[in-house]
Length: 117
Length: 269
Length: 114
Image 1 (cartoon, chains in turn purple, cyan, blue):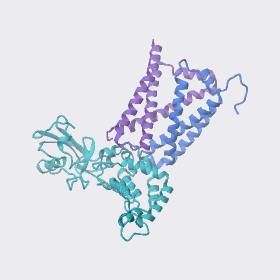
Image 2: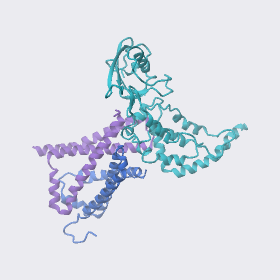
Image 3: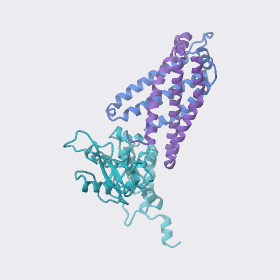
Image 4: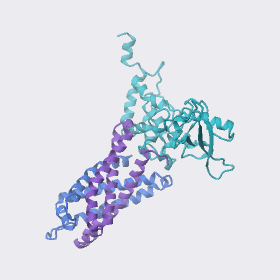
C-alpha cells in the first residue's frame, strides 16, 4: 500500500477499532455475569487479574486513546480546513495518545509487577 | 531526497518492468548512467530507452507538466516524471526506483490501464448543465465565484491522486478524488443548474462518504490541488442538498441579468 | 450518509461517556469487584447513563465494522446481509446489556426491576 502518515493513521484507526470491537464482546460477557450473581461476576473479573492480562490492559488503553484522539482529529478535519496542518495534527494526536498511555499505563505496570513479586 | 548533487557521477535507476508476453510477474531492472546537469526523470527514461533498452515503455507527451501523461510512482510516491529533477530523488547511494502508478492493472512496464479512472470521471457528468434561460452576452459570475472554481480547473487528469488513494486500493467502485474534485467544480459553478442531482450522485455509497481523509491525494498532486477539502465541502453540501438547490435557483435569476454593482460600475458611479 | 452523521455524533458522545467512565470506574484506587459496581449502579441515574453509553458504543462499533468491511470491494455486494447481521447483533447487544445493567439491584431491596 502507498506509504504515508495518512495511511498509518488510517490503518491504526481501523486496527484499533477492530481490536476494540473484540474487546467490547469480552467486556459484555464479563459484565453479563451480573445476572448470575456476585460470585460469578467476581470470578470472571479475577481472570483478568493476572500480570499478563494487566500488561495487555495497557495495550488496550493505548488502543482506546489512539482511536479516540485520531477520531477527534477526524472531526477537526471535517469542520476546519486543516490542509496546511495535516501532518502536525496527526503527530499531535499520536503524541497525546502516547503520553496519556504512559501516564495511565504506569500504575497498571506497577500493579502487574507487584503481582509478579 | 538528499541535498547532495550527483552531477557528473554514476547513478542507478531501478525501473519496474513487465512484458506480458514474456514475464509472469513484474521485476526490477537496473540501469546505470551518468547524471547530466538539469536532467529530469523523464529525460532519464528517454536516455535509457534510446541508448540502453529500446523496449522500455512509458507514457509521455508535453514534458512540461500540462498533459498529465507521465505520472508514475517514484520511490514510493506518485508524481509527474517530467517536472522532477532526477537529482532530487536519489538516495545517499545515488539510486532511484521508478514504478508504474499503483492500484491499476499494468499493461506493460510503466503503462497502466486507466479505464477505471476514466469511467469514474464520466460518472460525475463532468460537463456544464446550463439553465434554461441563457443570457445574450455572458453569465455574470462574481469574482469570488470564479475564484472558488480556479483550483479544480487546474486539474490535468494525471491520475497521481487516484493512484495514491488507499480507498481506491481497497475498492475500485469508489468514485475517486479526481472525479470528486471535478464534481465539486460543477456543484460550485453558479451556471450549473443541477447541483441537487450531482450532490445526490456523489452522496451515495461509493462517493464522498467513502473518503477517509488519508490526504495522499494532496501530497501526490503535481498542481497542488486539494481533493480532500473539495470532498469535505461536498459532504457538508450533500447534507443540505435541498437548501443548496433552492439557493442555486435564486442565484441563477441574477446570473442572467447584470448584478447591481456592475451596472453601477458601468455608469461610472 | 446518515450512518456517517450518526457515527460522528456517537463518536463525540463516546468521548464524553468514556472519559466519565474512566474517571469514575477505573481511576479510583482499590480492587474493582461486584460490590463497588453495585454501589454506583444502585442509583437509577447511573443505570440510565450506562444504558445510553452502551447504546452509543454499540452503534459506533457496529457502524464502524460495517464501514471497514464494506470498504473492501469483495464485501460490497453483500452489504445488505452484513447490515442485517450487524443490526441484529446490535439489538441483541442493547437488550442483553440493558437487562444486565438493570439487574444490578441491591439484595436488600425487594422492589422489582420494572
